[in-house]
Amino acid sequence: MIPAHALADALVQKGIHFLADYAPRSHTTEAYSNAEILAGLARQKDARLRLALIPAFLSSQELASHSAQAIEISDKSGRITLKVYYTAAFLLSKIYAADFRAAGKATDHLGDRFSKELNLSGATDKERLREVAALYEKAAGLKANWLGTFHYAADRVIRRSMKELEWAKN
Image 1 (cartoon, helix red, strand yellow):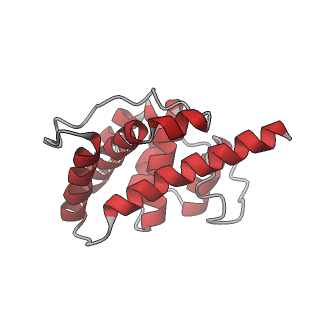
Image 2 (spheres, helix red, strand yellow):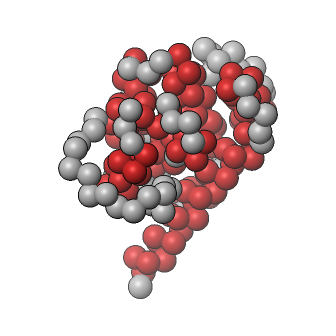
């Protein structure tokens, strides 16, 4: 298993700062593939590390494009986590499309890969995201506000992107 600090470092190296404060920079020299990073996040016991999948998918076309390979190398729990979090990121990219555009963050690289497999039937993206949250609560066996957690991850990406736009102006 990839250590948490190494996963945080790998994301920072890809410009994803969601876990930047998770652990001090370890200056990891070992390189991990994109699929290994995603699979490593999916198998973490720490919910915050797993949640970093959403910013990873939203922020990096490179990482998102390796979701299928990550699923191939994951165990059953990791596979469902990857599919659910990818689908949550896809739906959040649509729900918050105007906010992502305003923040200069392109999210059009995400496609609808797993909705059919997850049997989502909601008429709107918000309804489908609620279904994804309920599905993950059942699959994970953890009662939590997954819907709020998913929205929190998107909000963090938007806020960080807005700050980066401000920093670039100064």
